Figure 1 (cartoon, rainbow, N blue to C red):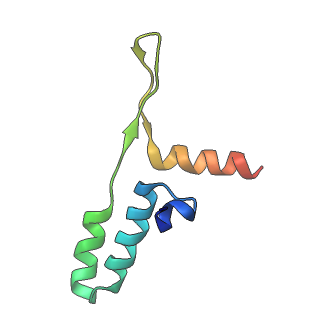
Figure 2: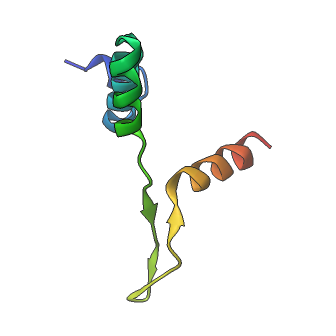
Figure 3: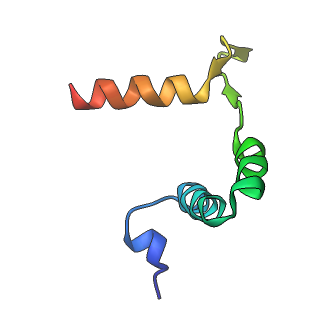
Length: 72
């Protein structure tokens, strides 16, 4: 049996992100603002090569650049 998010071609993390955004948008105005602030994350990553850590990059910026590169 395949999960719906997997059949749609989504990763589990992406599925959770979409579901969380839908829940936050359904809240009343005062609670929605507080929940949206909690939902913002600043994730960073770095690639390791030869046992050494590379430059730390912002995940959102890297995803935007990868999407632009893929559409070109």
